[in-house]
Image: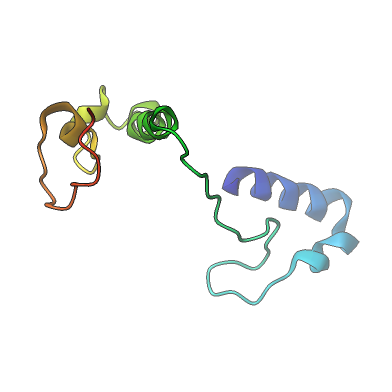
Length: 97
């Protein structure tokens, strides 16, 4: 979303400059805001859905090129679900069974 917002802002600056002030905000970290700031929440109604979302999260560092397999990324909970390692002492909500 960040990259897409940047592209839209560049387009507006080039082609529709009169529309750009409509997106102006007084924020410390940005001058313009193109997206509505609402967290995306997904109800995990079934164990299948939970596992699907968890796998997606675990694969993010792999897709980003930060590691070769999910369990090798230090800040991931993937190792907890593979072998029970709990480096941070807080992963007790789901055992992966």
